Amino acid sequence: MSRPPLTPGPLSPRRKVPREIPRPPYALLGEPPAPKAPRARTAQELASMREACAIASDALAAAAAAVAPGVTTDEIDAAAHEVMVSRGAYPSTLNYRGYPKSTCISINEVICHGIPDLQTTLYEGDIVTIDVTAYFEGMHGDLNQTFAVGEVDQASKDLMEATRRALDVGIQAIRPGGQVRDIGKAIEKAVRNRFGIVHQFGGHGIGPDFHDGLHVQHVYDRRATTRFFPGMTLTVEPMLTLGRPEAQVWEADGWTAVTVDGSRCAQEEHTVLVTEDGVEVLTRHVPH
Ligand code: MF3
Ligand code: CO
Ligand code: CO
Image (tube, rainbow, N blue to C red; front, side, top):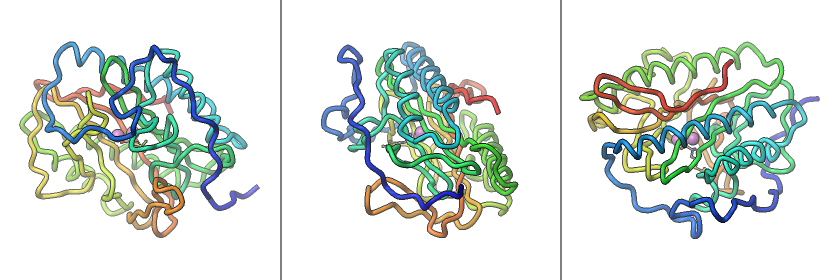
């Protein structure tokens, strides 16, 4: 069966988080604190962050295991939610700026922030990005990966492979004393004009805040001169497109970002730590 157009669907009832699980400050009213300048993590913060990243990674693995033709995006969201709450973590996206679900699930031309619903199902040949963020002991860990649903066309395979490479080279460009713009520079060089690189969304500093004041561009931006220092934690999360990289957000839900030209998009995200002599990846992808 061929895939019908993507449209906003009805949502399942609000998922429950056991009352003993500590919430981030925005969980009740939806408004995160004003962005702060990035600072070095303490040893204790880092230990908690490693666990937040491990939980998010395991939740992504559970979500990935549910990927199959005919499965609804709500079912995939439920699988990730279950892992997070069973490990004592709060699904960071729940009520973040009013976002209604525990993951973002973005199919084909959806770039990011697709909202899991009861009606949207996966079709053979789709590509689907699942983005999971967990909040544990006051710290966030954030990752995503794009998966193939059954057999996908060669262009989609190439796109996914290039996106993985963009993530890898972007991360390897990070070193203490280096600058944020090194990431976009390395990604542009690796992608070599073969794919679009989304510039309207980026990575971010992460830690006690889901998104802090550090913005990470995946294209070269001369002005991104903030320097990396040991103890800094951030995400790298390039979004590559088969066509033009311009994004627009669905008016109907205020979240779902799609390519303007309808071309497919893949994304890969890790949370990383700047070390004394380089960089360490804190999250863990599902093996290919
Ligand atoms: N996890 C996404 C990121 O990589 C952010 C999702 S925010 C939400 O930064 F509100 F859309 F859930
Ligand atoms: Co992120
Ligand atoms: Co994310």
